[in-house]
Length: 142
Length: 186
Image 1 (cartoon, rainbow over the protein chains, first blue to last red):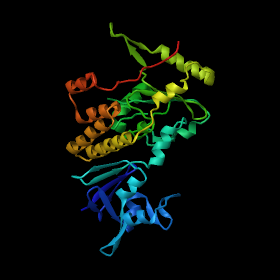
Image 2 (cartoon, chains in turn purple, cyan; image 1 turned 30 degrees about the horizontal axis):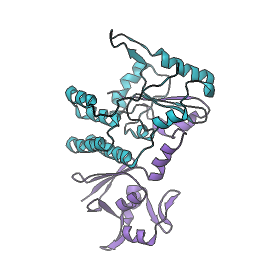
Image 3 (cartoon, rainbow over the protein chains, first blue to last red; image 1 turned 90 degrees about the vertical axis):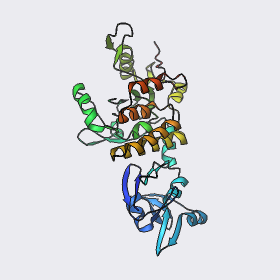
């Protein structure tokens, strides 16, 4: 049965996932397309960022079964302190940002950078306003 | 920054009416609000030319309502503080000191982040036609981060909570403060 994965805001369907309790095992071939993370010799990588794995971590996260290699993405998410929320009935797994990101946001006095769309969908980055004062107001319609 | 899961459709009329000349941005997953440890709206931040936060999480409305007469007026005291900062920059007396900033920017904890994950999963499920499942995750977010009124209020709005439910939660003597105190020196 397929599983819906939401990884840092991007939703995708993993049609060949296996579920054991909270653990989602993905075929290695589908890992990068569903999570943007990829298993390499140097570790688990997303773009320039690589998380090295010890041999025991690798043994717990990677296994061969049914002529495929499988990767336990929940286990990896816990290793890098991604918050996880699960809806078992709809088979939906939500994974937030890794710990090194959310911890650095709150540790710094520098305003965390963001890029957000305006009403027309055009992206605006806080970074573009360096050199000017910014009054940032969060509000809602409710 | 509209921290509103209703997205463009619900915030557009407000922005049109304000005839805003400033950036008006959307944060439909409340992810940027989480990034800034916003626990209720409205919440204002002052960011200086170098990107440093010099005031954080001000619970500020543009209009003030007189509790006796019900009449509204512009919040001149706060506007004057902003004007002072614009004119005087780092020597403005309205910048928050270390300890005030520290208090307002309580670092996110593991349970704050788990609450955000549950909340965002709830929003996703609701958008995909699963309101009953969504409610379970909104409830979990509230248990994990009881002082996050943004999540609570957004969930009320999405699930059509009654006024009675809302009033009961806000008036609960055990409930965390709805807004932080606005400390502005005179």
